[in-house]
Image (cartoon, rainbow, N blue to C red; front, side, top):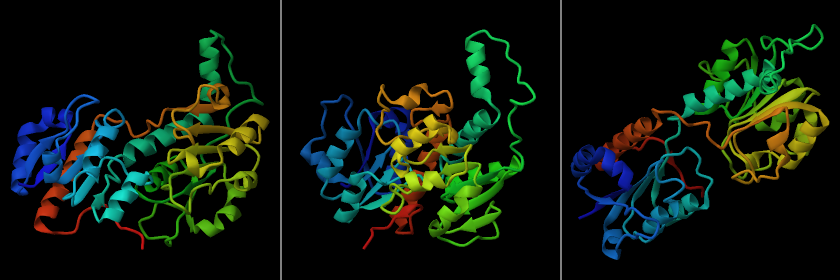
Length: 329
């Protein structure tokens, strides 16, 4: 009988509901074995028709999970907990003809809130206050050394999807003028003041107090924010990246931060992860580094699960799937 592959942890938490949902879709349950050396039998791999790559699998059990789905000749559909599909395994699945759906939108609120938290910490000068706290130093700001009003500043948000839209909405609520960057035109519900295309990005960068990267990593966006683009920013602009590290030239950004042309940065993603211990970004007083953790939120697993079970019912009914990734031709 065809089967649904899930993690041992997810099964331990939701065995009854998973069983009910799977049976409703005409599937048995197969549980990914616990233990880094454990493997699914060939017989079980042959029966896997649907697979759920849940967040608890990453990163510890990722290799084990994808080893199983690679050996599953009958796999029809893979749902993943994340939004980005830039990893080669997803291209491999699509090329095999496996349907792929993501959890895009499920973490948008948490990621946007984290990005705005970084903006507020940088914009309000919190890093200097925190440094003074660690030194037990009482250092009030003087008239010539106070943060610039955030209200009235300009944020350029590259990528107005689920995450970028929420970042833009929150930025507008703080009084920022928001310029969105995407291929599509400005719509009536878009929370931006202006919309430009990626081809016009260089034109608007000199107006940016904040450059916020919220686009997926694609062939088009890889290296999009290179040294030339960073050089277009006005002196004192700040950078936020909660998308993918490969979108920004990290060396050029580091140099700009060190030279003071770029006033600060909040970075949750990097070209190499984990960020190497010898990276100068760790110790820069004007940089916030977090470990690719902006989506972390207690309700995230539930949101991913709800999206998956909705899609499972759709898959069984042969209805269109939510967040299905289309293979490029």
